Image (cartoon, rainbow, N blue to C red; front, side, top):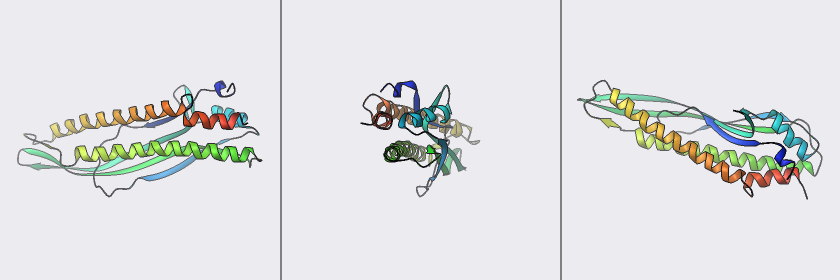
Length: 199
């Protein structure tokens, strides 16, 4: 436990606030990137993560999920109203995970693989949250109609208001997930302990 407290590491989700989405048949593209860590013990590997992990503000993370969301959007004038007729997303989710520099000896190798699999599974949940947000954006924006809006300015403002709320809700959901997972007895906390303080 003492070794764990030497470092304050967080798993975090970042990404620009999204815009709009459409087309229920869209698929997210997933990418995995790595950064290198090294060590001959669990504690050394964990310290290496603390020194080399992706920097997010004042701390470094064990792992990190980011996304890029772009879209094709079409506004249509229908009489005096403006309607969002097309919102087609292109979503790329990128997972940043640690990778060991050299082959590890047993039993550390197995402990590391268990740790890494657990961290990757944690980040996949963040990816699922992002997908959920895009689907919610789709539901909130496709067919959005504002009357008396011939230049579609009111429609654009209404859309941005809805998207801002959905983005904030997704971030809050991710923060709460991290709080539980990394708190005492949480899944990530247990993964760290099993790596650093084997029985």
